Length: 132
Image (cartoon, rainbow, N blue to C red; front, side):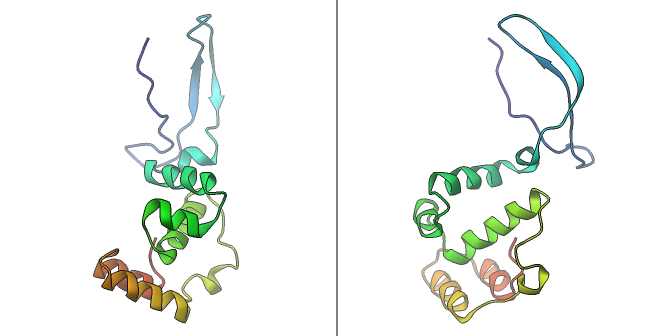
């Protein structure tokens, strides 16, 4: 049996979307050639795909994602937003709310920084609403 590798969704040379041009069945040795789309999930980095798997396993409950990954609420939200954008979707609420940092989020960021769960650079990005 041949090793099976994940399909890269982006070209390692130019970064554009890849397409599949050949599919093969190892059982019956049939091959199909053409141009096949990979789908939006293939556009995600391995880290983003892992986040999606955890998010789904936690039924979309951010508090459970926080616990499983050992990260703060603002970090979960930022990873979710990053994943949504990587899949080619707009963020809910548009760009107006993209940089808004609520007092609760600000307090959580500072608590996470004090506890050593995030770096000072991550804290600055989170407080500016720039974390991706």
